[in-house]
Image 1 (tube, rainbow, N blue to C red):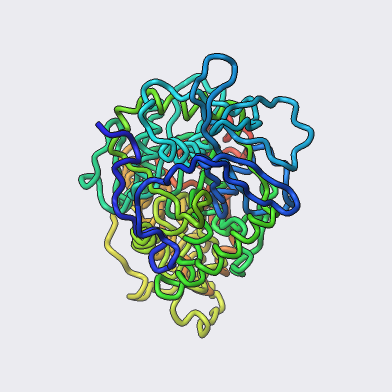
Image 2 (tube, one colour):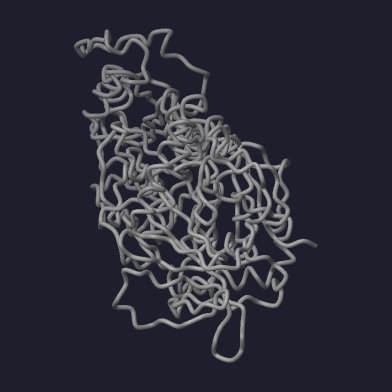
Length: 553
């Protein structure tokens, strides 16, 4: 079979930019040495060398690992360069390596290799022997593999003994390649896309539908890494996005209004959120497929100018990148043949960067949303919907008024009635409803605070009903299970009064008074909620440490 990357399909990446090469053949090898001028310095690399300019979510994901020798500390763009040559230690092995940057005068761990009969200094710990299994691969294929597989390294948990689990989002060629590569690296791999479980077939990879009723994160449970090929939940370096405040993570500006990255870690033990989403892809997402491409062209031209002026930070991969990723994939060359890795958009003969893919743009646009009108909340990711957003989603919320709470229960209006549920009472959508149904009658109750636009709430509700049914059947039921919606200004006011800042949440009452702390969980059954209910029934005072200890046992 022909090796990986040699079976390329026509790409839509960079469509309309005027930069995509019409000729999709491999880069022609030039016998002479290619000299790149970097400011006043000369960076000598062979013609069988290539530089990848990395930006956006990809750079944010990579920056915590590589060494950097050049560029400002707040840089959001880097360059990764690989060259192919032969060792000069007598073995004459064909090798991949990263050339020593001209601005690096302090590195001691260097070694010489022969590139087109010229001696080139490279970082010793980046030297990767090209295995016999891929001896027929052309230089261009090997270079693209070395440049493009860094997300795999970022996703892997180093020094972890047990088998790891990873999730890949997207269905494009890059996503499918990464999923197959992860499985070959002995990682338990899931691929989630909008195309459905039956449209993609990758050996040893479980395909999931993003439109499933249950969020994919909840279905999978605990996992170590998530590689996002169609988005960037950190929105790294997006200074033009004024939709929220920025935090600083590992030197990268991060906008995570919905707390997805934090929730992945705390709810699913996902230590590594890795995005391959380029700045060009984000520009098209923000400006549309009609106006975006021209802006991408202008952006890429400005980045290339920075590259030629020497202002980009040099990225040197970690010392174990070759041993953990590149060499194992070479040994599996027959298994990954046919899984094409999309070729980066070439700006010049040996300089390239990720552009944008129309197919990925469509998938991101068609991904189901957690909330109407919220373009950032992709369904399935562990989103905490802030009650501050409720007013934005509620129609006519600006004209809503808060009525005084009377001491006489009012009859629930027709608008508050939803489908009959014999185990869970739907009590309304305001503090007045809560007062009339729970507080004034002095009920012992477990109240599920939901929102109509919250798909996670909808997936949790059937399990809450089952909890209420089991409780009713097993116990002499005096405990009331209820559901109340947070809608518009009244919902926001109710959330503030109860100390709730996100849905779904569960609030307990004893004798009509709030009992204990708000329980915020996105998955049922929950040991924490079940333990809290036992405390509520027992008559004991709330004990946070005891409940936490019991729920984690």
